[in-house]
Image (tube, rainbow, N blue to C red):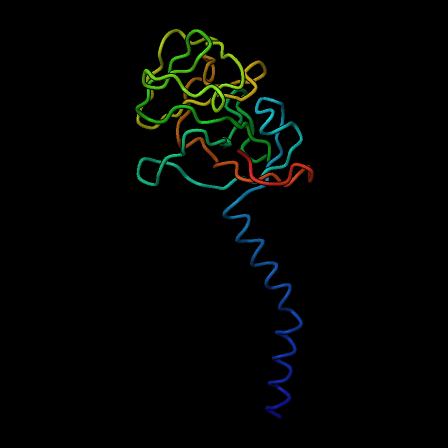
Length: 187
């Protein structure tokens, strides 16, 4: 009798193991990362409209850590039009300035704390200052973001956008899963 009961327990575990593993992985995956659909070409060539990317859901703060310069980050809401936080469409931009930095755009170049940034990393083309008037000093909880496609990008150069706070960041854009021909890490 106990032998039959033990055998049934083992059969049940073996039968449902793949489902339990899949459900556990799905829960862990969606808690730590989130898929997102890129809309617009503001981050072209790094991220194109229609790309599906994975966002590493990091929470940034002075205590938990800051994003790195050059990281592409996604925001919880579309910071330009007050978008809905529940959609999987996020505005994405590249981190150029961190808390305490002073950012200035002049003569088509970006300056951080008085030093010109490397053109190939932060400036795919000459950068217009947009609506910025002079240097922008970032507070203890602010970041300065720019789009790679400066002509179409809506970023911190606009007065309506300006520097963004750390708590607005959803996380770092880490990986592209669609289209398959561009599958891989996002830089």
